[in-house]
Image (cartoon, rainbow, N blue to C red):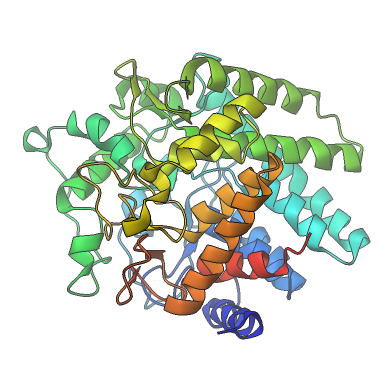
Length: 442
């Protein structure tokens, strides 16, 4: 497909996944509204349907809790929609902060919404209308950030912890293996559940394992049994991770909120303080000078998590490193660990080092390429003036989508010609970010 054809195809995906209230991540596998998915989707929609872009985010924030927490799932009303975990599983009515009129999950996801608002404003032709939308959403996004700094930063370092792999967005990343392995499910009484994500014979090979899910469910059981009280959860939860992807996205959204606040005439001094502390602590605590990457930190076990995953590269997007650090990160990106060699030339950057013994080219976040990660790294490379590498990543992403379609994730190796797309097809954020790649001409 040429660029015009792939643009039309991407718009068609978003149009077909629109259900009247929000855009489903995919036609069948994900029937509800997902937090960071909707942020990326809104960017794509803004290029051709601003009404829907705004409606997408308005519906998402209908699920915001009164303490500012923005859930990772806002459930739709489709009666035939089957997904585990469904709305009854979460028992969010146990929290005094959960909304009464909107079913949601009880955990959050990476806070993309600040930079999403900034990107929508950049795209908008009608700046007056766009500014009014910023004014409407700005306090809601600030409230989310305040929730994170007030409730997920117990050491007051400016580093937010996640309390569940689902909060990272990179569910079964190798980053979480050690912390999850400490949860001995044999000693636990795991509530019964039926997975709805195994819709085809190969799904079990690509998705997180049943053991992963047992541990995921156990963590949610801790949240439910403690009425989603963050202070108590911090004391009891075995999974407390300061993730460089989550915090790198937070700094980018902080930065966007500072700009938006200036445009709106709002006091942004608190946001500036938050961001300065996060930038400082990420570089003091998470930066790995030897490898040129940011590591995660396990708060419960008080140790760095030394894994070469794309999570540790996303701080480039958030402007966390200084130029010298960014150049070390670029060196790693150009290393065979992330770029391959002549025999394993890649379509972009895999989610896990190509040199890792346990890399899996087909399994979710354990090696495949995701278009959102390519998009984040593309924009991170651009902000540090690595224009050649940024443009190459963009073109590789478009070529991959044109060749294989709008899948959820992809085998990173260019040598694979067939069955390179995995997960569900007609995936909304792959289509949305394809549109933004195509329309980004500056």
